[in-house]
Figure 1 (cartoon, rainbow, N blue to C red):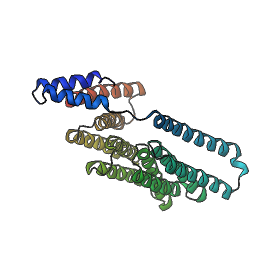
Figure 2 (figure 1 turned 90 degrees about the vertical axis):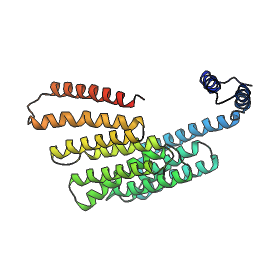
Figure 3 (figure 1 turned 180 degrees about the horizontal axis):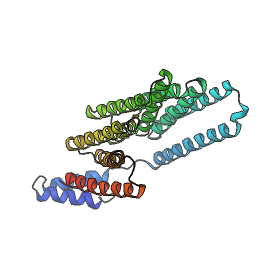
Figure 4 (figure 1 turned 120 degrees about the vertical axis):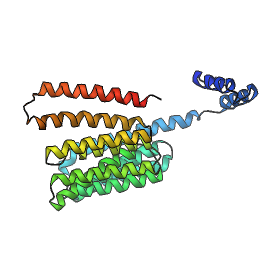
Length: 293
């Protein structure tokens, strides 16, 4: 029988002191928690081996591709990446534990690379579509945090490729990335995804990056500041620290950009760094006051 952690014992003691649990109830809870069997050692060993095996498989594939890429024909490169993707998916199905999500996320990456190699006229668009589909399917089959950043990067690649295909201006790349951020935020707001904080972080990053794409400086820092303010507003509604961090980063980026634009570039780099530091300290202090219960 194992002992409870100090924090668990303290929480039980507080519940008893508050009258929400009797001493007998607390003992019952304590016995139930201490008698619970941890995951069998063989399962944990299998999980570790799965992570190591997945890493070695990816490393081996990277070495093969790196050393022999030039010797492969175009079709050979595509089939090699497809084979790695199939192996990763097959391994994830065979293992069926927490490493499954990692393997499926890696399969989304290699599948996206296969599509990029197959459709080399528009590699960003093809790779982004394939990786996004595989990441979403993998997350639906086995919700794991690894698929979320893969899906975010794939979505960004899709936007860049689509804008390139249409021959549109870079501003539309920024618009597309901000839209992706809004989609991610909507998934969090409606509890569609299990890993809300990571999804919110990816959505914030996409929106902040997208805000930097417009061609006019005024639009850039206004859009960045708007994203930061939205992050602060969302943080007040849903106290996720990643939203506060995103807001602070957005303000820290937007203010020096605005000063540089207003002064027509006459402020030197040292002053801009000083301004960024002051803004970061101020925004961080305000954030801490907001975060304080």
